[in-house]
Amino acid sequence: MPILPLETVEGLASPNDTAAIVEAKETKAIVLDAVRAISDHHCAVMTLFYIKDLTQKEIADFIEVPVTTVNARLHEARKEAQRKEVEYGRGRPA
Image (cartoon, rainbow, N blue to C red; front, side):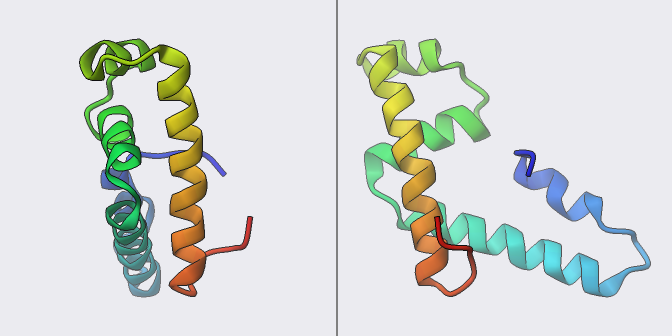
């Protein structure tokens, strides 16, 4: 499954397909809930990477950690967010 910005999720549904529009909005809400529920340092790197479109190097410079730490936090954040989605009964187990 490709990774898309949250703003594009709703745009993928046909304007005449009400069910698809509702599902897209629910998916966006699930993802946002999962991101809000993860730890602060994981949420920070996910926000900087996916929302602010910073590179791993830019994030590392900004938060003053090695790039490998940023990469590890992104990996852990994705796993943590996926676990949160499963806890909410909305995602697939890893």
